[in-house]
Length: 234
Image 1: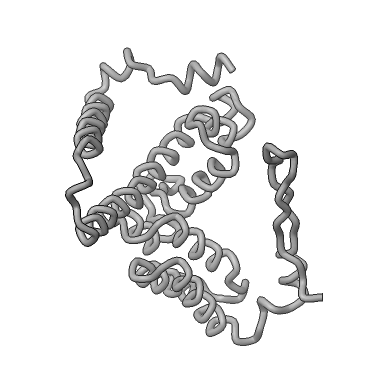
Image 2: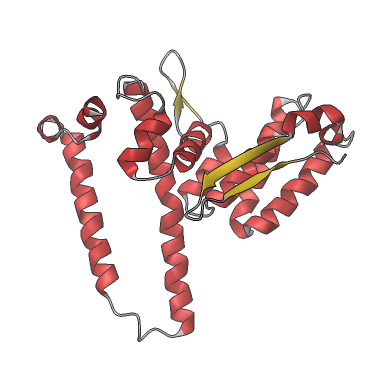
């Protein structure tokens, strides 16, 4: 725990020697000040249309934040290992530091792996694994639910789909997702999967056997736990 706290706590003395770090902290100070000012403004004078306009702008900013987090997580993982940070996994590093669940930490790590900037072994920058989805998120057009649907779609593409077709499908979903609700995107993804998987690969017994699972959730205050999962048609 001491080792984790040592690495997790901001090293201000080191940061003061880094112009880039100080610049980022200064921008965060400005952001916090602007947010405090925005939160202090009265909302009672707004009519329903104005309220929706403000909520729309806030949602865009909410959706843009993970794009920066992806870059930060990639940089963090490139600089150190979870063991060096005093934990057994990156989930165990992030969850207590950010005050989030291990499940949420795992989702953020997986999203960063799919949507964050990458580098080749030789050092040159590479596009994200899901470039269209990453770009849409950076513009604030899609949220985490959209990202989860597109990632799930790509994870379940039949193995014999060629890389070019898979990339085109991701580009289509990433480009259209911003104009759809998650429910609408899920329907579109299902239709596109049906077009790509005309032989019914996803409906065969091997796919069902691969996907079937049961997950026991954490206990609630009453001691009960939620059970979720996938069961085969049989």
